[in-house]
Image (cartoon, rainbow, N blue to C red; front, side):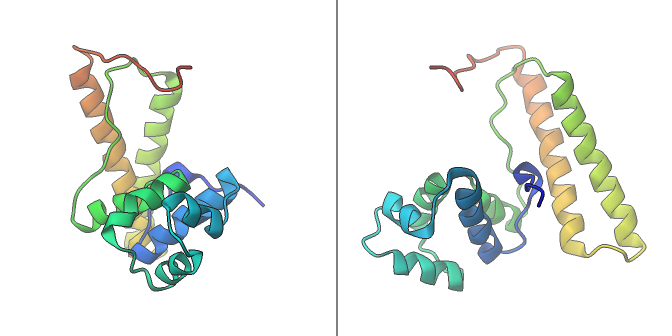
Length: 159
């Protein structure tokens, strides 16, 4: 069984976004629903099961849920459903060959999905997810180029 590529996944509904967060926590952080609920500060983990099943989580618990799961699929879905793009904050750092290769992969995938969609071999949700990923990748590079004149300190990963 191959591992999921979490960076390229895009949720298609709120319930799907909640499910992806739960799966990410289980596969990457070895956390079950009980542990996620505990980290969110919930007294009863059955409430979290109910919200996952119905897709109706209170808005003030979305960020604690995402922090406990270590991903932000719900926030990304909310933004995408409102017609907005989400990108990580560009820092103005120099890009590596891997960064450019990842961008090229996103663009090629989006073009391939578009071709497949117009020949009726791929559904609209998959095509839209690929286009969204490609646009977010380009938007990040646009912001990174703008920020390169005043780069910020790269504090991520520092001890």
